[in-house]
Amino acid sequence: MKPIIVFGSINMDLVTKTPRLPAAGETITGYNFFTAGGGKGANQAVAAARLGIPTQIVGCVGGDEFGRQLLADLQTAGVQTDGVLVDETTSSGVAVITVDDAGENNIIIIAGANGRLNKTDVERLGDRLPGAAALLMQLEIPMPVVQLAAQAAHSAGVPVILDPAPAQTIPAELYPLVDIITPNQLEASQLVGFPVDGEEAAAQASAVLRQRGVGSAIVKLGDRGVLCATAEETFFVPAFSVQAVDTVAAGDAFNGALAVALAQGRPLREAVVWGAASGALSAMKAGAQPSLPDRKTFEAFLRERGLGAN
Ligand code: ADP
Image 1 (cartoon, protein in one colour):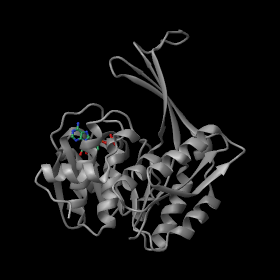
Image 2: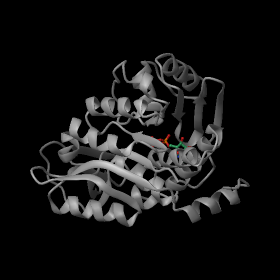
Image 3: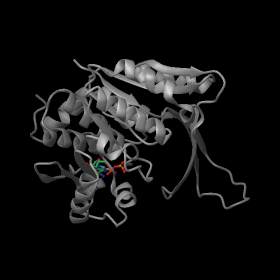
């Protein structure tokens, strides 16, 4: 089977739990600390690999203990990591996350090794593109390399799926290189410049994104569902009704499963349903990578909801 290639960020999440967030200059006592693999690139690679499709990640970690741990965790999840460069001169990307009892959080991301991805890394990626099912990217790596990578995939005839997260402006030249763009509500609002707060606004936003040159636009509307606009049709897929625990990485779960379904040759409408199912399953479990479903859980969920996986 053709592999999915992810070109993106690999971070160590440093998570602190505290009763409340500290004010500026204040010292408070938290009650829990843990580290977990993260970064949107790594999360989406794990989301795809857990569903049983060959998945490679191309990226960079630092020559530190976090880098070694991150690579080992990706391999355990079934992600092929020989496209990841270990840069001894820099530190691995980290996200310093503080979460309080009300679920409010503060996050500081230090790009580290992710921020030094450059033209040479795109060349490394280019060697892997021929025969790939799709190139999956996000925006936690420098925009110029995202653009170069999209160009390389486009030239190689490999579909580009772009998750424009975290929210930021995208250069006009990038849109026509993107086959499928998958913003959430906030990211869609940022891209189009008007609030995207429901199905109708999402349809308008996806029309704007298509006018800018993307093939299909998929707007993720959290627990409401997904709006998808292609050249042929615009349709809405409601979210699965589930008991949500936290929605961290729901969007990453969505993108991984979307890419897997497309790699298996499924129609876009079914791929969107797969994305929604994976997003819902991820919302049912705490954390980022630990919440991403494996193939067995995923198929059982689809069967339970009257949808076969075959
Ligand atoms: P992001 O994580 O990028 O903000 P969303 O929160 O929109 O993205 O989640 C991605 C998709 O996951 C949604 O479009 C939806 O299909 C599914 N999803 C997210 N939260 C829930 C939820 N509480 N219940 C059911 N499905 C959900």
